[in-house]
Image (cartoon, rainbow, N blue to C red):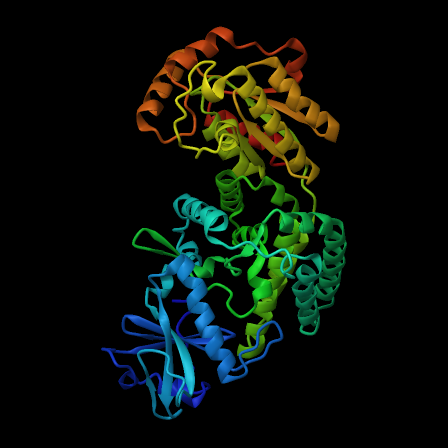
Length: 524
């Protein structure tokens, strides 16, 4: 059920846990009981159910030291996780009897309880996405499903933090950040890692001070919400072709009531840690495109470093409990150090008729180069309050596609690109850019930030364009509403690239040409 192999060292377990390995303790058929252990809990896999018992520990950032605290946190775990995995979380059960002869009840009964457990439906522990990754089975299908589900969860299912609550205030945000550094400093022995940790601490403190006004603004805008809080691949599973998101933070409101971009940063960081830069960028861009929260990207590096420190802390605690090595701690420190390094900000715009493959090619480019993409087809509908796949019914110079509507859309794209460049990220804008004023608008943004400006000119013959547009119209799976009439209008009215623009142009005609572009311009 959790991303760890079943524990085999039963002798070191407390008497209650050893006793619960006996199948006779359960009121349902159990052939064999398996035990999974984390640094804060034991999970007993018993037939079709799993029982999660919290360790009686106080680690500072969590406190399970009393029976009442463990009961409360079991109830919170069920309440919170039912938001994303209702079918898994069945309730809280009381354990009665004695440590040597325990019995699991069917529901919570405070009388004579010696312990409490969260009862869950069991699924194969190797179905979690970290195990899929180890088997080479993690790919775009799981990542796209996660991004879409998470965007919907953040937008429609999470409560926003009340204005008078401490959650999301800069002072509340910095506390777990500094706590991580303090805990790690007490456990590191390698001089190089100690120095790296101190540099990361100084960077985090400086970034926090710089970003504090934005943190306050995002709370006012409702971006601080009651999130999952622990979104790494070990808490995601793929079962029968469906995504399960489980095991959220129940023990600390401060770690759960967070900026949504902090949640995204955790999974983003975890994919980077597992050497999946392409999937990390795919996940980030898909979540941004689904929800439109491009303003949060300015905080992404700060939170990704924080999340790397969270995992370094967990790795250190696990190593201390099991007597293992702390090589994983060093890996997270090095990743965090890499995340503090600025990327080369630049602005690219696509140029091409409907059906030329702008979205496909820019998707490949963003995964290879680390760009944030803005799509005119999506943003145009977002401005109108429509879903990306909604049909607006507009045609040439009608509905969303009037000249005024297009100017509004391109101005919005320019504004978003401006903010992303200000945050230090490279940007690619997926739009037709068939008129000179559209390209000039974005060029001015690049010039204002003193970053390179490039035009990705995608060249495809008209017969192929007509075939693609016709097929796309029958499928209805793309945000674009361009049909054959619109394509013909574009062919007749497109303004050619000016001679003064040619030094900015990179022409491509397919994926092979795009790969060559990546090698020449980004891979150095």
